[in-house]
Length: 282
Ligand code: NAP
Image (tube, rainbow, N blue to C red; front, side, top):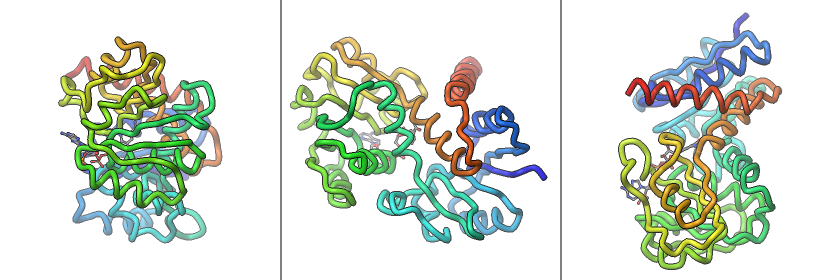
């Protein structure tokens, strides 16, 4: 019988996950279908029950349900619990288990392009939302040296630091304070929604003080090059978009559902084609 997977979110029409996962299932020869489900917050609980009733094998969770779904699951992986957000749900041992693959997906993509070990590196995370939390805590689990945080709302940055389950050195700054000392960072991770459609002409902070050779990773992948990436490149930085994070968070979910490793190069191509198609149509 065909296996059923999907993603729940509100809105959901823009999601690249269906095309990426449906292609990956076909490639590995699994008879499965991955569907985008538009679920409004008021229907989240019914949707989770409904997934169980109709025998869905696993699903992804996106905005705005990543935190709200936690009490509705049977088990939550410790890292996802400390992050306070679930993006992958697996039907296992007669119940739903929630995981977070955003942070691990990010770290895998960063390691691939950064090339050398992250050990002892001085890092800055811009933003303190759900994605920042997943990335910060996963980097801390991976043994990163020092990770500062800069956010518009400094209290949220402090909250993020205080909730970190693994001891790691770091301080919370305002965006303006962080901009004044950018030269101390080897790696900067941009996790706010500034730069994303429709905020493409905006940048979260000025990069005048960036040092040569700094690695800037922006987790936005639409557009593939944000304003801060362009400005950082002009100052001699190496830059990365959020495409690899997106592909790897999906690949890690796929592995949890099937026990198989998908072809991530192919997944990347599928998403790139989809992005190009969307931009042509817009
Ligand atoms: P979120 O929880 O809503 O957090 C948003 C963050 O952006 C907060 O730090 C917020 O600051 C900041 N922000 C928003 N608007 C701002 C503004 N006008 N000025 C200054 N700061 C602003 O969102 P999220 O789930 O973390 O997602 C953030 C971004 O990551 C989105 O663009 C999303 O598409 C992207 N993302 C990418 C991937 C991937 O796979 N590549 C995965 C997940 C998310 P305050 O705390 O001050 O409000």
